[in-house]
Image (cartoon, rainbow, N blue to C red):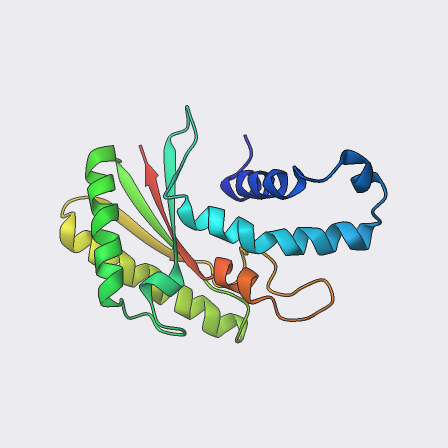
Length: 179
């Protein structure tokens, strides 16, 4: 089963390519294909932003990704007032889902050094863990930080330029519900 990012990319690519004849794709070289994919990526981000959670039928887990930009100021691990509102919806989902455990995974982009990003991801995961634990007493909630080690998008474009959209996707907290 493809992951959420792959599905979003496929949806965006299909939406973009529908008006184009298949013959045109055969005429493109690799650089043109890559440029068109990069052109589609902002639309992928828009589609991903609308995906609330990912449920894989038959799986024992549900992943709820939340952009770190929604939860924290840049470089901070202090929850914003908007974050508390966002997490209240997650608490409702957790109560409805009835997981046995919850895992909060913190991630960063590649701006800054590895050690700083690792600590920031751990602090962010711990802040979300504390907020959830305050509303869900008795539920096992684990917090782990991955720093910049598990990007879901490139932090740089193929030509080496900064890729703000990719970095934004990589700054995230994923809440994993395990049944």
